[in-house]
Structure formats: structure tokens, C-alpha cells
Amino acid sequence: MSHPTDESCIFCKIVAGQLPCFKLLEDETTIAFMDINPVNPGHALAVAKGHWPTVDVIPPDVLADVARTAQRVAKAAIATLKPTGVNLLQANGAGAGQSVPHLHVHILPRRPDDGATLNWTYRPGDRAEIEEISRRLKAALE
Ligand code: DGP
Image 1 (cartoon, rainbow, N blue to C red):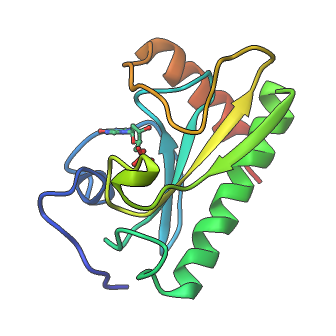
Image 2 (image 1 turned 180 degrees about the horizontal axis):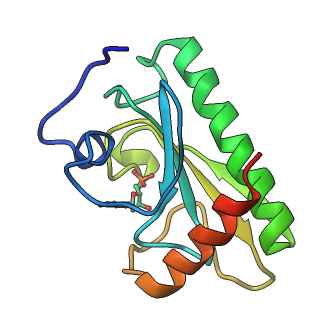
Image 3 (image 1 turned 90 degrees about the vertical axis):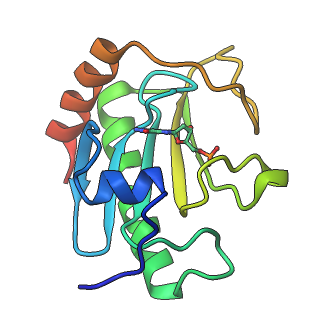
């Protein structure tokens, strides 16, 4: 299936396999992978394969596909990581804290006092820990 791309977009490069990621799943219109700057352990992203920056321009059926993928990842996170809760978060525009203008939903497994807020400062995560959690999530995907 063809979709719009932007050659300067980091998520388009991940979709195209030009940049590595800890991939959780992929289907015709979406991909899910671990966030490289996790707010907390298990932070993952459900991403449209096509380059639509924000919720107002993405076709509704693709948005629904992204939601379905986010749900699958959230279910795996709940089953495997047993967080106290999960936030799904999706930002549109710099004023909303969006740093990558390619539509994505954050899956944030929560822990008590993890300090997660609506907008956060990006810090590189521990790659070995991200990879280990990605393996556990992948094994739990339905
Ligand atoms: P937002 O600020 O809502 O646009 O979220 C963008 C997220 O993408 C942020 O949490 C960090 C993450 N991110 C940025 N660059 C990369 C990358 O190259 N690989 C991965 N896996 N995640 C990235």
C-alpha cells in the first residue's frame, strides 16, 4: 500500500528500514516500536506508516488502525509489565509538545511516583533495558 513519505522525517526513515528501532509489530498501515527516550520502562509508540503530521490531516481509517495497534501494545504492556495504569497520549503541534511531526500515539505504562507528566524532557534510555522490555512485549502481543 502506498502512503505519503517525507525524506527528512525520522519516523519515515524507521518505517522504511533506513534507521533501526526495537520493533514490536508491523501491519499494512502501522508500526509499533520502543521509544528511544522513554519516560518510563515500556514506553512505546504506535505510528502510522504514512507521513501525516497530525490528527486533523490523517485519514480516519488510518487513525483507527493506529488506535488498534496502540491497543495491542497496551494489552501486552498490561499483561507483561503489570503497570499500575497505562496512558495513551498523542500530541499535535509544537504547542502540544509534539517533537516528531509524524502521527504517533505514546503508550506509557505507569508506575507510582514515576514523575510522568503531559509534556516531558527527552532523555536517552538504557538501550539494553529497552531491548529487554521489547522482547517481553513482543512475546505477549496478540
Ligand atoms: P512527541 O514529542 O510526542 O512528538 O514524541 C516523539 C517521541 O519520539 C519522543 O518520545 C522521542 C521519540 N523518538 C525521537 N526520535 C526517535 C528515534 O529515532 N527512535 C525512536 N525509537 N524514538 C524516537
